[in-house]
Length: 60
Image (tube, rainbow, N blue to C red; front, side):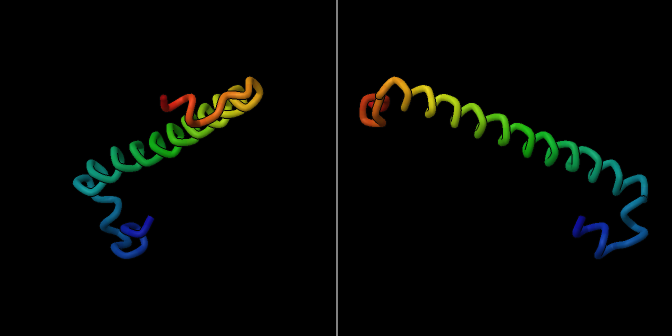
């Protein structure tokens, strides 16, 4: 976004799109992946809390 605001029309050149396209895809994938991992960690922690497992037992 910042690049598009600062450089305006240069954002849509072929060479710029070759770099910005994959970077945008990577950013979207990273945000999705982090959301999935956070959701999974919360689920695991909730299961451990329900079973009465403490952090010290998990790391041991």
